[in-house]
Image (cartoon, rainbow, N blue to C red; front, side):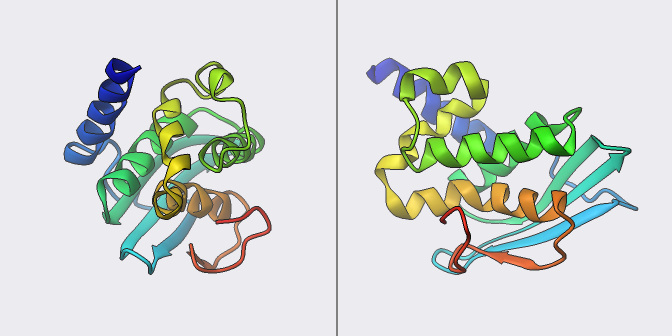
Length: 157
């Protein structure tokens, strides 16, 4: 199990050092802002949507390794998904990081995103990992509001 944790940590560190999709999408159809005042994470999320399909996703901002890696991997994961599928991914990811799913099944359902399963043991880190996802949900829903990890969400932090 230690080897697996080391691998997960390396994946997170790699996405922190070299985040994928770290750019602005000019003319993005959907955009949202996210902020974690607890540790200072901030991000802007951009989605290019055609019909009901996310054709491109990107982000910019600053934050801790977990926050940045989560945004990097999330933007890769939602490309090509419908808005409904992105909402389902949010729900699944949120259940995983809050410990409301069976860890054995996370890899099967979330693929590479299962590297964040361990944050469920660190309450403050749940907010770091889920900030990008709450921001995604806001963009998908076209909510046009700044998302904060310190605001009460219907689904928790």
